[in-house]
Length: 203
Ligand code: ZN
Image 1 (spheres, rainbow, N blue to C red):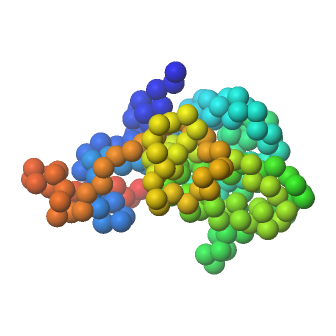
Image 2: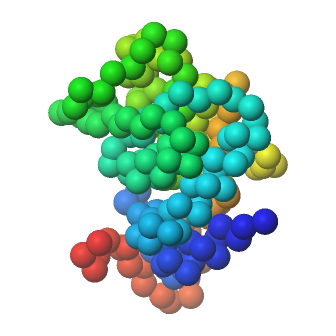
């Protein structure tokens, strides 16, 4: 079994410390998802493991679609591993759209792929666009699952804020569930440390 968390740690994609998240909450951990895909060999390795899970399920997939920007590399790597077509959706003035000449055929079986699924908001928006063009969404996938949605084979139950339909298969390599604290209730602050913004050094 592949140690996905170690791969993220080694790539500095899973940071441990004391972080101030964009929500304003504090956390001991921070996922910098893009970092794990910095090395194409690692990207390929992770995508292959994800593809094997999906293939084992027997679900037929014609195309992988990724919501830009976060899902671009993971989606491409997964499509390569599954040996299927790859397209992406992107926001145009805030609205998820499919452009650049990409077409979706009637009944085309599409899997939506992200680098990380949190509540799956962007993934669902991409799914809606694909459906509006006649595609059929057959599954969702992500390299990492933040632990709000229930991935296939995990005991971690689905939380209320997960937007994925309950009957839709969702594949991911690992659950990255970690506590978030309101600043006034943060045990790390109580210990005297100062929370840093992960993006504060120019990333
Ligand atoms: Zn704190």
